[in-house]
Image 1: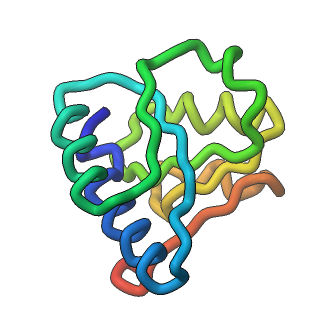
Image 2: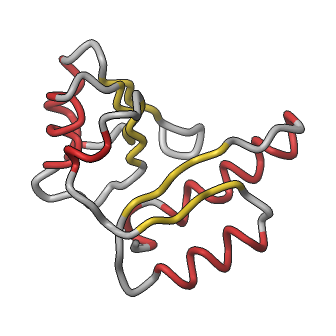
Length: 116
């Protein structure tokens, strides 16, 4: 869990969504990293419904239909490729590192008004 993997953008967006829609999306996040405690603290401060789990093999995530990856710092983008190959819908940041994946019908790139 790293801020640079998009949590710095995702958490404020989820907070804004919760406030505007009076709905708190439930999200499961998998991974480890040096920022995990700080990200979890900010999640709690924003009163978001994110469940944090340690990193696991992608094969164990069969029950999920959506893979959300707000990161703009991927080098190999293997997590996106694996999720697409598993037939999941992938929501990813519109960024040059993700351009290859836009050709797949289950890839849903997004941009915000700040970066479009």
